[in-house]
Length: 194
Image 1 (cartoon, rainbow, N blue to C red):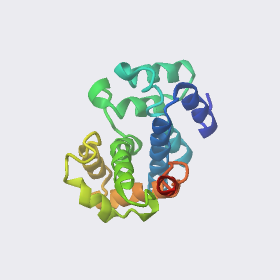
Image 2: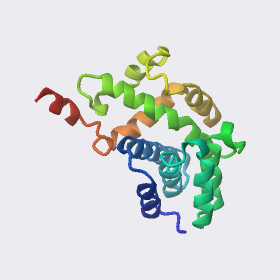
Image 3: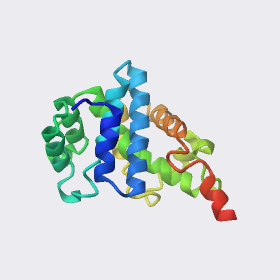
Image 4: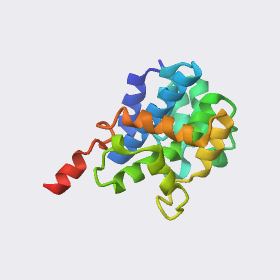
């Protein structure tokens, strides 16, 4: 299988119906592309990994991402992509994160969810109005977006050699660049006020 965005998106939409999960994968894709640019890596490959990392979650939550890895292998996807998908859940799969690509995926995954939560409590519901300070203000409140584990962002940023708040800024800026695709462009607030 050619590891193109088009092929990845086709696989994702075959397995995922939940619009929030689709938006999550788009957010992770954008963040991975930003990190690929930062490190001078293959932006297409890193984006594809971000897009595919949770494609099996909706159908196989108990066996995620093991079923996803099997499906990718059966489809002829490159082993480097399969390994990255497995490594983002190393605690479940036992597959160690080794590369910058794998550290980046680990670092951005939960962070995108926290940034979405910060956006949704903002009156504008527009991610383009969120700042690193907005995220920092919610970071220590463990009750806020409790499902978004801060540990991977902290650990992943350190593994990448990036300051935590710079890391937050990189991911936030990447997500801001696709605000409309994420449904975080302020349209929700406008609809609520109508």
